[in-house]
Length: 285
Ligand SMILES: NC(=O)c1ccc[n+]([C@@H]2O[C@H](COP(=O)([O-])OP(=O)(O)OC[C@H]3O[C@@H](n4cnc5c(N)ncnc54)[C@H](O)[C@@H]3O)[C@@H](O)[C@H]2O)c1
Ligand SMILES: [Zn+2]
Image 1 (cartoon, rainbow, N blue to C red):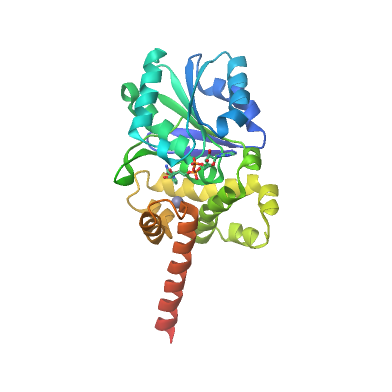
Image 2 (cartoon, rainbow, N blue to C red; image 1 turned 90 degrees about the vertical axis):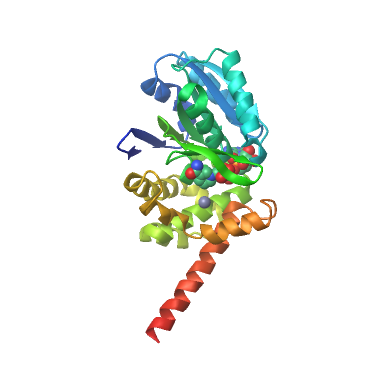
């Protein structure tokens, strides 16, 4: 278990295999009885929606689920608007809350809606993709895309807690697992030699699955320290952008269609490392 300790707020990140089955009691420790809007997508909800709804129900929470189409297109103001309508129809007030169950798209969208509806409702993140488990679910950046640019509209809003069940990665497509690994490798390269050594021993996806809990915890630890030093992304936190300037350029030039974020960041890190190598060799020779 990890804690994020910020000036404004502290919250817990639970990383544990099968943690989804604890979501009722864990949420019960954080929140009194209330309505919960469970926001998820069309891939994730059919697999995990019932378990989450069931355990929250056993704890006495009144759960209303809203499922959006899977994919980046749902991270939009239009979808946010639909969720605002859904919350209004179900009489959500400031004492009610949201839970985001899904990848980074769902996390960013849920955080954005929660932080803007009635000037802010509390929310919990339940990330199910590796990228969301090691990166997007912590740190408090929320947002939606607009026609001209990604993540242009958003807020800084911290969740009340993050529950990570590494077993959800068993249903994540291999390509998505590899994309998430780009952010794990980034964390190792910028700040954790031991994680780097551990990763270098791994040769196949099964090795990652077998070590998922410790990999996630170590990557999160790197992000935690940087976020705690610089919540609003002005100094130390920028280190997490290693490989991202080139990566974002590649993503944008392919119109966000041909290359994924993880693939683009991987290429960005390789280029930056080559550049750094050249510079060092030039300086010593
Ligand atoms: N807020 C932040 O700090 C931050 C940081 C990095 C990235 N992001 C955002 O995160 C988003 C990308 O996140 P992502 O890669 O998770 O994308 P995503 O949410 O689209 O998930 C990727 C795909 O995997 C599916 N999926 C997720 N979990 C699954 C599971 N357990 N089993 C089966 N399928 C599953 C989803 O339905 C989707 O099709 C982007 O919008 C990016 O801008 C935000
Ligand atoms: Zn990234």
